[in-house]
Image (tube, rainbow, N blue to C red; front, side, top):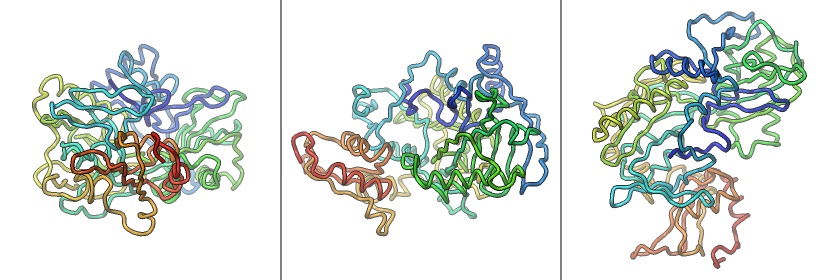
Length: 477
């Protein structure tokens, strides 16, 4: 069973949306390359079925309004026949994929005494489930929190996440940590003839933009002949203007970021300021966008606890890191391992003589860094070490803003666990707004009807207090 957070279809960043009027827009992953034998064979098979097609894009480099310079390369680019989301949809055929299900990051998975895994699903998503094994094909803070209290401590160590626009200049011994950037995606519809016609996509160098592409070159124009373009920001711009996605729509921040990116598009293609007057725009923040470093194994498998990791950041080869192909190869390699040698661990060698987080050169907003090894959990202590202290519900952060994110909840129904409390809070404060939670228990293990909660932002904490203070829950208020 695959539990997927997407509301409508699987794919995550490999997704697309339908523009008003019916045009297809790729608002995250722009294309897939196929360099390996297995992924090339898959693309050719899907191409034969009419599910994907080659995109012979005219790609150029743009810098400071100067003339476009063609980008040379022999890579074959593939897109879905009806958007990048079609690739993920094709791979999901025949599988039990459950959409719009968010396994609670706090207490969502637990390892039970008989060696089975229990998944606690949010309200309305079904009953709890038990499984022989768990694979985390997810990254970011949610994956880190999901594994914060499981006994597979080295798996959790690899899922610890840092958000930044670049990697540190020098790697600290034992300080290796997975790093993601944040990228804004702006889709805008321009009347035909306004944007340049001598290229289909551009690598933008300098300024807030990193990528610009004409979706009409892939899938045809919008109704009325307009062209819908996608502009992707640099990681530095994303970090500087980061706003929680659920707090973006209709705000001054949305208007400000949209305007800045439109001005950057004009500067990149040589248009006069304010010349670009789009018919429609759609702004989205990919908070966990692109990995800036890769774990130098294609997958991770803890054979003792039967929990694994796969993703585009697990790549023994630099050319596959942070790509659609890399994600496929990682999942394929883990599946083959589980089919052949499930009793053997893999990719889980930590410490000075183990694996490394290796910088991904050329990533959006990426920067050179040093390969860094990861401190084993038993030697590292601290972060992620369980409940209290520096683990769930514990310290870190410091400062007034940190304490503004901490809540103490009392008069809880005694039967409520952490997952139920997270569901209640996030129903009013927004999905993924809870960072950590700990229901306090007495010596006999029974709930004391109280909990410590840490929210992702002070704003989310305020909304939780406003909505829940004095509310009757399970007969208690």
